[in-house]
Image 1 (cartoon, rainbow, N blue to C red):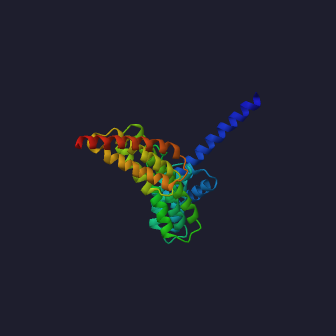
Image 2: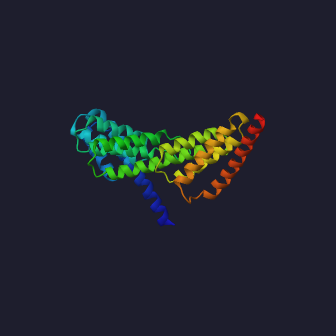
Image 3: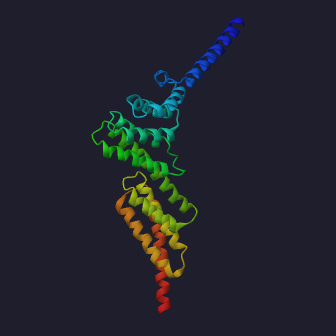
Length: 273
């Protein structure tokens, strides 16, 4: 019990000493000393304390070699704490201010990585995903020979996969809500935007299915045209995916469309007699 109490006292004393030491460092008016302490905290991965000290001295040392190093480390202090909006701002500031620095390439890449870490799940707003893709593409354009290009391209693929899922899910939701016209438009856009998607076949099928549903609930005046359009989508599907996953379901829908089309044509003939 005494040992536990002693350990507790020592721990509290250590914390108080540490806080007291850091407080003195914060109050120091010597930028050089404060810079060295900030670097020491940074090297020991104490990014909160390091960032606080760097923030205090950056206005004083900006434009000096130490200022360049400080802004570089300060940017990482934010990144390592998950403060990606701040790291994005500061890495961009570093790149724009010190583009001749040997760390400029890395800083531009970290702009993209900060954007990457700010992206939302596919069911939420994807504006940050689009920004991250643009940031990685900017990096690739500026440094096409970099060893990081392959990783940047892989990250773009991951981000595009989010956009794909978002767009597919939106189209599917339209179909589920029986907003068939919107579903057809959305699936058509998906097919145009993501020709290499793993969901390409599914998008073809659900566009056909949505067009079929739209046709069958349409008024007589436009029903025939919409059925014929659905049949075209069916033909595209079976031509593109011979023996595809949805072949059986597609054939059943197609047969019902042909039957409905025959009834419409029969009624038209009878009306013209």
